[in-house]
Image 1 (cartoon, one colour):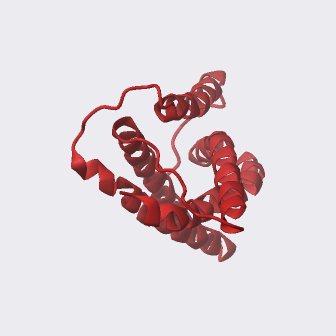
Image 2 (cartoon, rainbow, N blue to C red; image 1 turned 135 degrees about the vertical axis):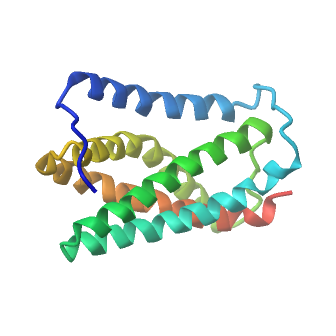
Amino acid sequence: MATLSLPNDKKYNRIINIIAVAIPVVVAILLNPRIPKVDLGEWTQMLPHLNGVINSLTTLALLAGFYFIKQNNIAMHRRAMTIAFGLGAIFLVSYVLYHLSNDSTPFGGEGIIRPIYYFLLISHITLSIGVVWFVLRAIYFALSNQIDLHRKVVKWAFPIWLYVSITGVVVYLMIRPYYQ
């Protein structure tokens, strides 16, 4: 896979910054309970289950990408990371569609599991907001063949993205019994 000819340009940084801000803002608006929901049909109620699968596959793709880069297999690393990024994009569309058309599901667990759930959920949400910027920069640096900068940013992007993927699955499994 050849690298693209992307200059080290302020334009790309601006685009990355705009996307990294716009995504969490749109999601926050959709999660506002005062925003009326759009009826997209009952099929949207299966989207949280799909998102759990997507997060699981993203975790596997991230781990595969890490494995391949440690083996110095650049081609397979790129494939795995491209798959992880593609899955992330699909997840985002699915997540937005679900919250555009469905109310958030309240967690019904009690006892010690409740604070554990909320710790995982809050850390997952907080880090998922920040990881977008890191991932977009990592991809930009890889595609523009700025490998030293790519390595620097993935030192942050990879562990945060992996944590977000794993906690996404755990949070989903914890709230799954409470979906209608």
